[in-house]
Image (cartoon, rainbow, N blue to C red; front, side):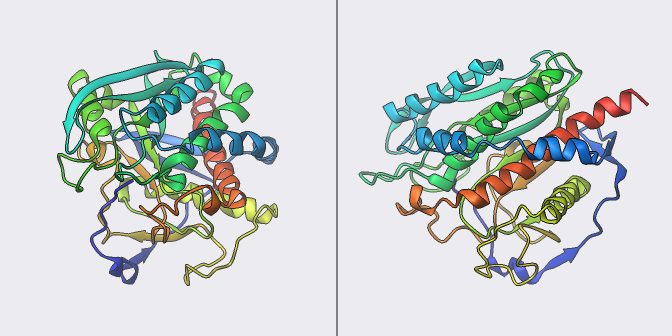
Length: 348
């Protein structure tokens, strides 16, 4: 990804917030709809927490860890792998295709991958990432954290939760995954040379009125390296971010963690998700076109960025699969907690 950060002085300007209670009411979607959620029961938590398949996670990452610049054979190969993996798991997959002219390479075809459990649902929790890799001339850039690992995490989530997600194939609230195309700039990060897929899809869905169906869009980026630290960026999803903290705390109590302890964060060095809201960073990423249109966002991206960001060192050797699986667990648990909250609400 080619996020733009205004300043790394952002760490000097943080605001702590209070974590959510066990039950609370939050607002979702552009329409600010109240949504009541509850924490997973111990039985549910233990069940979902036990569904790891690290072998599959590693295999999925391996399949994506090739140069995949838009328009190349590698790009096509990875797209086909993602589509086939999800269709084999029973997801409905649509390709949003369009052409655009880019610097250096000229006109290219882009294809966003949109996968739905229930394509007729009224509302969606969306999990997303980008699957293209950055054009770096003759250099073979594979973008392990940027963004092969997030792609693998989403495919792994679909596989290990297959049985439990089946309940949401006919519900009004369901799950969607988006693998954005063309996130990376081809020459220089500019409004017209970046976010090709997300800009086009957000505009399309605004015209069609589909944006109001999105409860929350969670974007994963730059994941896979050890000791990441995450912050809340947006006031309207602060309550939902706090659920990520609570889930991490439950996992720590269950003894899941194996932090590398490199001391990147001096705030809470034994945590991934920090209990602070960060208001002074502006990061452009695939969430931006949706954020500008009022869609609630959870942006799961580490600050500071990994030291090998946008270098050829961002390859398989930098992936810490203990950290990756820890984060995958948190995202899986959050997903099930969110979806099950709607069922509990309708049954009370």
